[in-house]
Length: 318
Image 1: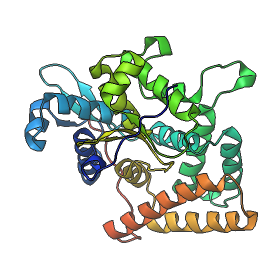
Image 2: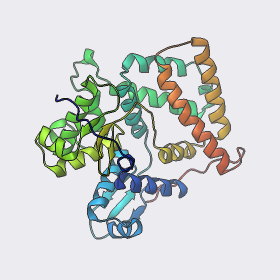
Image 3: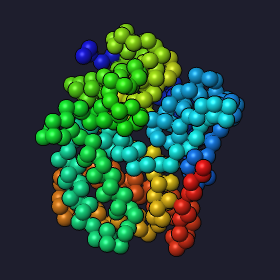
């Protein structure tokens, strides 16, 4: 791999790309509406007019939403973006990315699972504890099972679970390039966030067109492996390991399962007590990040309605 390109930072270069900003705005709208699965978010024309974006920006927004598992495109006269119910796999990809960039492994995830298993909440069908356990088990399955002879890396699995294709050979050029860039990021000697280069730099380095590089960068951005900075000195930057579970998706997912602020706070408090008794350990990195997300949900749910009032489940819309 070539040495990372040094990019001068600037105020303009720290801005999020337009497509990601629009995608996150759409997710927030879905959260406010109860995340109506299967409902038409809007046609291409309607979304372009609403956000003041062009055709290419809409396409990139749609790709970000599809990668994040928030929506999918429906073709045809009645086509447009359709809301997709938040799924555990979406959070699994984000947590796997975090573990990977933190130089973690299956053993780290296994220890986290063992710690969550000590919670005395599963017999009460606690939705928050159940979510944490299911998520960690899902992430553990993402890593390579060498004993089973599986030679695909968990990075390949990240892309494969973000698409409907069954094998790497069936992936589009953009997804193939995304896997190559991911491999280089993880294997790089540079551990701190750094600039990989501009889209033009990557096109020359990997031998793909600018359009393919642009689409691959949006895939990586949706998986939160990179940050695409725009402006005079922008470029594609690696990220500091940070778990940023999709706020809108996570809140909708837990609310749909009836998780109350009290349950979230109780689960977080008990898990922190267990971790305190265990002392310093590598897997605390994973659990601390998850607990921060649970704290945010508890605060949002408490502000949304009284703790005694149950959270409504979002209906499936045909």
